Image (cartoon, rainbow over all chains, first blue to last red; front, side):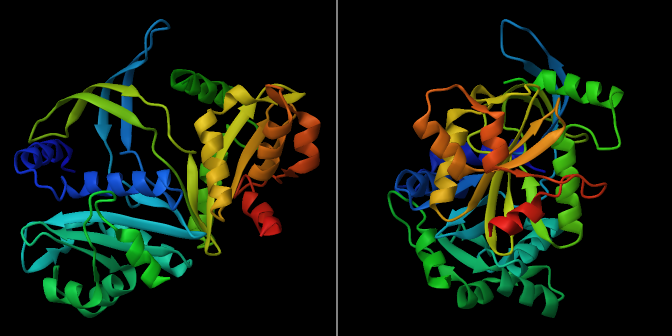
Length: 185
Length: 185
């Protein structure tokens, strides 16, 4: 769990801010906002799971949590509905130019994506190669195929490029991933 | 927002524990676990949204959150997939024997349920009349119909009984709500 670093990443991204947007999470939240406002899709990021240990309860002011810890999520970060279909995905960034390291994603998140696929949902990863500034929608079936046939701890960039879909950037929405979901459907 | 009271509710329920189960949330979590383990449906409770203000970051131990506050959820508590369909619902308890007070549910949660219905998902409330020990699955279309045609701040018990589905209790799963979803499909 790397949440405090995430904050640093956001700060870095503000410094190196380009017209393409900020970090991947902000870009996806921006896209989901667009899809929601335009009644195209209803997709939300799930809250980060936090185990609350101590609270200060005060009737006059908001309850203050004074001790809590981040927990490992059971599922992916994003889910919702598009054209009646259940959509489920996670978003991951890597600085590598040559591969996507599988330790970026928890094994139970992979299991979850596969379960969703098997139940008839649309599940995938959105993978951003930060250095190349390329973002791919990578369907669970290719993730599963790769894991079942390889001992490698990372998925080569070329495998993702060949089997995934390059996502177009825009201003609003910043990451036009629903257009790709349309191709899959 | 009533989270600290929720803790009291759990304690109360332990004292008054019956073979029917604990509070509604625990019962639904129990059912979702059953559906997941038996590969029937993949439905999770979303984490409670919490705004983190201060953390103590320490490399050797887990990051400790020292100041945080509960936030109002944007959506419902539960969502997932069943038979390829997007499922979305919230669970509410009332001690009233005669009606379900609408102030139990945030207006943006009602909006969310209606959006999901309009996008072709299966959305509903699970309402437990604690004193009567009756639990109903109440579809969004009837919730919407009631709100559009009534000025009342609560839905009469009889309206829910007539338009909803009484959910059977069991040992595992405790709340057999997927059987009702099957009837709706």
